[in-house]
Every structure is written in structure tokens, then in C-alpha cells.
Amino acid sequence: MAGSSSAASSSGDDEREAHEHESRPPGRSASLDAPASDADAGEATSEMSVEDVRQRLLAPIGGLYALAQSVTGTERAARRLVERTYERAAEIVARRPDALPGPNRAARTWTFDLLVETARQAPGEGARFVPRDATSHADANDADTGDLDAGNGAAGNAEERAAGRGGDRHFRQRAQERFLRRALPAAFAALTPAQRLLLTLRDVEALDLAGTAEVTDRPEREARQQHARARADLREALRQTAPPTERPLVEDDALSEERLTRALGRMAKRDLTAPPPALRPAARHALRRPPQVPPSSSSGSSPEAAPDRGPDDDAERERSPSRLSRALTAVALIVLAGGLGYLAVGFLGGPGATDLATLSAQNASEMNVRLRTQRAGRAEQFVRDELGRRLRVPRIEGAQLRGVGATEVAGGERVPVFRFRDAASGRPVVAYAYEYALLDRAEGGLRLSSDLRRALREEGRVVPQDVGGRRVLLWRHRDDIFAAVTDQADSLQQRIAF
Image (tube, rainbow, N blue to C red; front, side):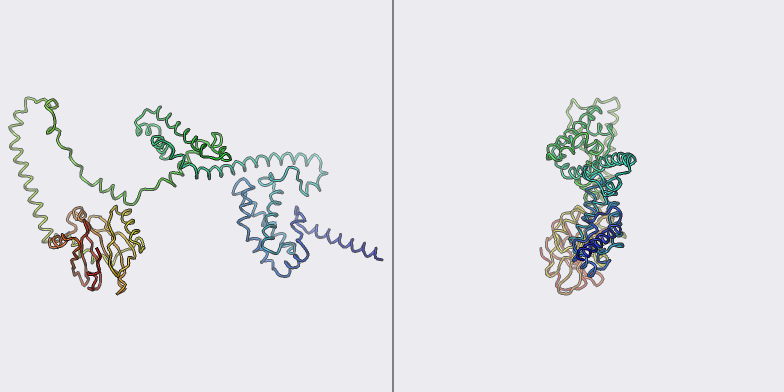
């Protein structure tokens, strides 16, 4: 009786095991579908809903994608492998939710295991990572198919080897890019300035050989040879920098000329900084500046260098006094006109001229902060980078710096403007930083009266001006003229620090 009951129990266990085997998705092993223990399965079934299980399976997706990238050839293949893995997980959730693990750590291991098995069964990217002596469940069950399986296996192995070579090549290229990103700047710096010039012209700026030869002032053949030598020296510097495990990445057969050129271009974009904002206005001012006429060579020339005189020189000398008198008269008229214009601007204020105090009071309410900062050093750096000027941020006791900007004044010129907040009144204080050179460049568009000029000769003296209900305080520090605008005529004048 005991024997029959034992046999019946064994028969029931076998039937249950067979039923569980049939309910698994095709290709799944028992290690993935079966729970770690009956207690774990009961806990997973009773305490977790299907949605909870899905959330636990999605938690390690970052590590899952990293694992997929390490065993596939491309990022696209890695994404496809992860998607297939979660598709298989969805099938298992739908058919046997009790087979899923409970704790997060077990879910992570279970998901990794599922990805590896999915890669084993995929005909392509991931299958090449199966150990050579390993066989799948399906291969063992279908061993009686004979020649058909042999033919398919040979074709599959060829496909897997091709995919393996492509995937390994892609993985090596990514490692090569990481190495070049790290080592190329140091190798580039180890070259001579002439070699760096050639590589920058040819490989970064894509200048043709004729243009490179013209810039470097050498024949085209020599420019070509020197450029090839520079690239060879760059490769050698990379080899010396690379550890033994990374040295094959920079060999000639691994690092092509095109890939090296692209790496140099990426390095230039990353490490060779863009022009600072102050460079463009400085170049514009240099282009606008009238060229200086070199001194006449006749005054310092030797008698041997004097040109031969022709027969018309005597007549030319006879006409020279009249030319000289006309030139002197023209110079006198120009000086007189300039003096009259200066007086008109200084005392009368031409129609296009604007007083500094008036301009500051009018623009104070429209000040735009470009950089919000409470640090004077950062504001001064902004002025250097943006406008090419070096100055000290004015200090006002009891007022905190809140930001810096730049505003356009007459003639398209821009000046820095600082925004403060008065701690006592809570009202803003706007301070403009002009300079004497700006008055000259503005060509009469800005006016500083003679009285203010005389008052500002004393450095550190604060000159108040009332403009439309606002108080404008002007003072000078070296060549800079500051104008602070406030809404209240308070004790701000006594709180300006020098």
C-alpha cells in the first residue's frame, strides 16, 4: 500500500514536472523559469502583483544595456537584444508569473541570465558568445535531423563568425576613440610648432596642399613630405603613450589616415578654444583705426639712395613755395574748424550729442543683466571677455553686486553696466563704466561738458548731477568714468569706496 501510494506520488510529481516543462516558452531553461524555492515562489505570488514584478525587472535596465553592448557589435544590436529580452520576460509574466524572482537582487540576476540566453538563441550578434562546446536544448532535441541541420549549422557558424568580426571591430573602434580622446592632446603637444602648424592647416582646417605650401612658404613637394612626417611622428608619440594593451589600437592597420584626421578635428573642437567674445570687437576697432603713415624715407636717406633728378625738377622747386603756402592754409582752416566744433559740442551741445549723465539716467531702467553674480571677479572677467576692457568693479558700501551687462551707446559702442541692490532702501543702483577713449570714438555722439571735465580731473571726487528726478553720481578712476544712477538722493555719495 505504501509502495503504491509512493508510486502514485512519484507519478503525480512527474506529471506536474511535465506540465511545467510544457508551459515554458520555447528555448527557456529550467534555471530561468523555476523559482529558487517554493517559499520564494509563494512569496512572489502572494506579495507582488504583476506590475510590481515588471517594475523590478525594469530597474536594472541600465546594467542590462551595458551587458548587451559588451556582447554585441553595435548599439543598435544591443538595443534589439534588450528589447527581445523584455519581450521574453513579458511572455513569462503572462504564462507563469510565479516563476519570477522576488528581491531586487534576484530580479537583476534573473534578467541578466535571460539576456544571455536570448543572445545564445539569436542567430547573429549574440550567438557567437556561446562557448564552443555548449549546445542548446533545441539542438539536443533535434539532433536526428541529419544533414539538414549540418548544413544549417555550417551556414549559421559562418554568419556568426562574420558578425563576430564586425562586432569586435566596432568594439575596438570604440576603445580606440576613447584612447585617442585621452592621449591625442599630449601627443599633439609633443610635436614641434612647425608640425602642429602643418597638421592644423591640413587636417583641421582642411586646407589644400597648394594653400598649405603658400602659408608655410615652402614648395608643395616639401609641404607634402613634411606633413607626412608630422603624421608619422604623431603616430609614434601615440605608440609611446599607449600601454601595451592599447598599443595595437594605434598601429597603421588599425588607425587609418581618415580616422586619424577625424580624431584631430574632434580634438581641435574640444581643446582649441573658440575666439573669446572680446576678440571680435577688438579686431573691428583695429580695422576701423586709420593706418599710421610711415615716416618719409627722404628725411633719413643717404645721398647714395637719393633719386636722380630730371630736367623738370627746377620747375617743380619753383612751384613748391606756393604749394606749401596752400597746405599751411588748409591745415589752419582744419584746426580752426575743429576748435569751433569742439566748442560747439562742449558748450552748446550739438543736435546729435548726449550728455553722459542724461544718457545714464535714461538707460538705467532698461538695463539687462547678462551675468547674474555677486562676485566682483566674475563681473570683471565678463567685461574682459565681452568688451576687451580691464577695470575694477566700483564698490558701494551697503550695496551688493547683483549682476553685470553691456549696453550700446552712441556710434554702436558698448559699455559695461553693473547692477547693485542697496541694502538700506532695497532699491537698485545702476553704474555705467565709460572711458575717455569712448568720447573720442563716439565722434560727438557723447558729450562731457567742460565743467564736468574740470571737476573729474581730481580722481576720487564724486560729482552729483540731477536728471529728471534721478541722482547721477560721476567719478573717475584712471581713464574710466563711472556714472551711478539711483532713484533717491540719499547718502550714496558718501558710500562710494575708492
